Length: 105
Image (cartoon, rainbow, N blue to C red; front, side, top):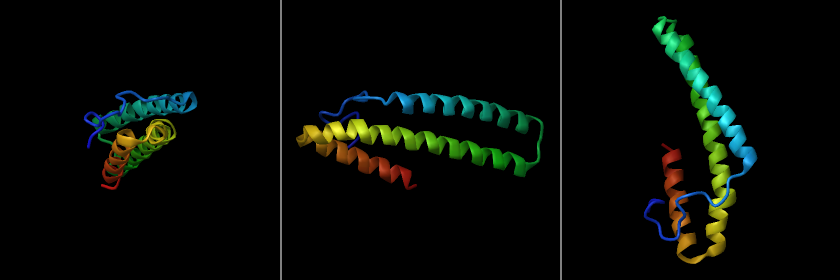
């Protein structure tokens, strides 16, 4: 069951930790710069291994953002749904399972 169709699942987060948000915005700005750098590297026909190292760096930075978003989701959204119980808790468990399956790909 996806979050859009799950009963009692909010479409917006129940809370966003301000420190996590600030850290993620900083990381995303850095990632934007890295992507621009990758674009230049490809445009300038840089050595393939150098490009691959930068791609790996961007991927790890995105994983860090993803971990923090998941941390916030578990601490706030999932905890709130679990506290409400019933269909909200069940829908959240389904959503979390689906997220884990996507992560494992």
